[in-house]
Image (cartoon, rainbow, N blue to C red; front, side, top):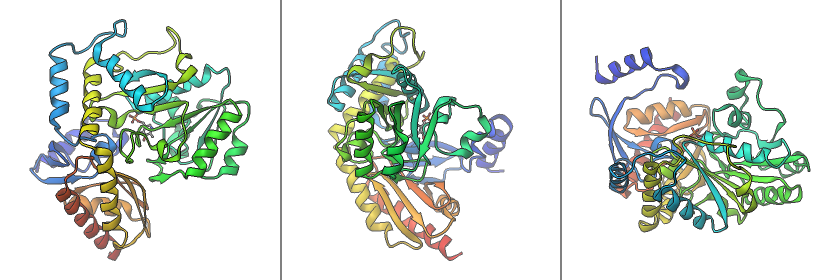
Length: 391
Ligand SMILES: Cc1ncc(COP(=O)(O)O)c(C=O)c1O
């Protein structure tokens, strides 16, 4: 029995099957490479699903976390602490508008926080988009436009409706004076790396303003330099009322930030919400390190170089009908429903990718991926595409 087989057997005995059985058991990582328990090496174009912006074992995160843990690791939310204060100020300065931050641990939690903020407007209707993904907790799940994910868990939150992404007329009809908020991801990640158009984003802003509804922009996956700007909404020249961040913010240390801008930052008062671990000193220190390295190493520009490499390498690859997305968040649409087979074949060839649906391959590598890893990874993907298109 290999170490991988043994690991998978242990997994099957002891871990809930909500993800399905994993195909690999990983042991260590460095940059954009990981190794499994049998010593096989992979190039990682998934990065913990758009989390490991600085790759694996980045010295800046290791140093920040180690230093903070040996100084002050965790305190309750009854005390403020320097890394949390600094991180909140830094995030607000990146958004460039006054606002207030709530720290938590995950993407689902930032969405739950924003749901509570939206309820504080005194209205309850929430408009969301088909194919969207906002998390697995009951509120975030209700806003997720994927019936397969929410149907088994009814009853859900009341008063949530869905319209199609990029359908401006559908959106116009969906948002009324009774709407408390519109939820959107600038690029729908789990829904298949589907970018919302600039026109749709601008119409979203306008309809929300016209109806006194909050525009909640879920950048859990697109945020923190992944699309070539700090936040993906910047590409459309709009401003959100509430901005949701998680995944890449901590570079692998769990942290989420719900940033409510202007007056909306004051909607949640004492005892209205909380999270024991939210933005603790260690998680905040990790996030500060991520933000510093993104800036110092110019990783926003790097995201655009990654996009250019993917487009050049994949647009004419076997079976590819579209390469879409922005920066280091790319979806490859193939001419058939064999994306899971490509994912499997790529893994055999030493490349980790994933298929959010049967026709799309998602590429969200670390922004620190080297030119060499990018080249080899693309080569392996092209081979996997060719092998699967032929068979
Ligand atoms: C846009 C978006 N929102 C929310 C979530 C949920 O994040 P988490 O799994 O950290 O709860 C995800 C996760 O993929 C996401 O992509």
